[in-house]
Length: 483
Image (cartoon, rainbow, N blue to C red; front, side):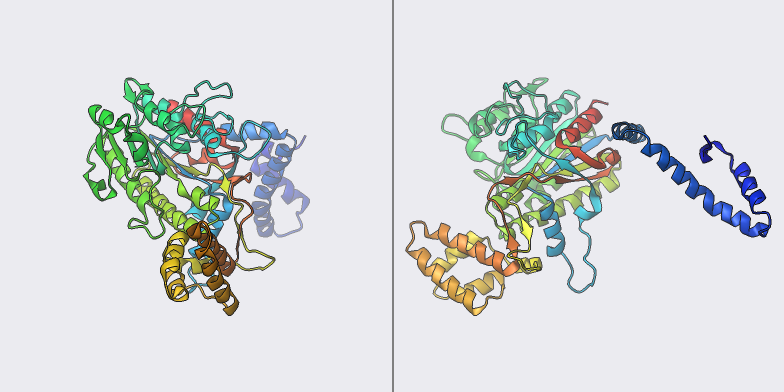
């Protein structure tokens, strides 16, 4: 069979010249120069189309892996609950109205693929524990499980593997550090809400006689400082530097270290004294792990995107996305100065069924959310005490209300004051009003089963291009750690 690949360029040119010898030579040579690469692509495509899809995928991945270098350091970022609607929303939230084009965000710049998230059952909708287990171990399990199989046998996590390979390990989260995602990297338990037992295991699940993580920053003090025991003292006895206030973050100068900055999760980004608290903790973590001058593996979680989604709170969600965006920009800058480092980022699942547009209206006014300066429950609390709640609304949100909406809000405040749980009731009304003004929609207060985006940057990022399952991400990372 005749193929362009088997024919030398000179012979191919001669055939064309002979067939069209009445055409001036300079035009023939120019024609050949244009036609040859096109025919080469066509032939290669024809050959590819004759190969089964599975063989194509295997061959493509083999080529990618052979040309991919193994990174020295790995930074694994998880946007909990961050489905594709959240990154789209952040793009429009962040858009510069002075320009005609919608600017790309850091998420757009680093996007390389998508991931499926289903658990080990027939629901197709995962919880955070099963999803985190998949991302931490490369194995699927049941909803609620913390890095154990369906028959509750422990699964090796990539941070355990990294620690066993004498790499520095770190966990930075805005939830409590024994919440579902960080726990799935550091512990093994049959149920995610066994918070005390999970916290205890951080001192008993040892690798080479040491806790799995050299650095843990986040919340959860109530699970570590308890009436029955004070785990922080045990960490101190093991040489950990311990702080319990974000104000003292700069006092951490060495590893190992533990920082617990709230009884449970950290305060939300919106209205916070530290609105970029994830970025600040990550910056400190990078300083500490870099000072050791040995390979490191770090897991960073923007935990509360998920909490905002469960609450159907778009202003909360955009503030958390803003913190995550600043964190990723920081990490990208770090990799630009440390090119032997890999960033991989994804979500464990999507939360809330977020939609940009609602009730048949082709509109989303996400930029208006930039003017919301307080969490909805804080706005509601002040409204219940205020004699001028509409003025307070404008001060806290700058969102314009129609006369009908003003009347409705006033009525909702009056109704809430007589309700059993006035703050909860009025908070719900405030969130609904923000959604109405911005044309934001939600379909659930739980998780949904849509695929989530995958982002990558730095050495070895090519291995994450395309569609994959969440277990594939962990499998690839664990292979990199093993090399």
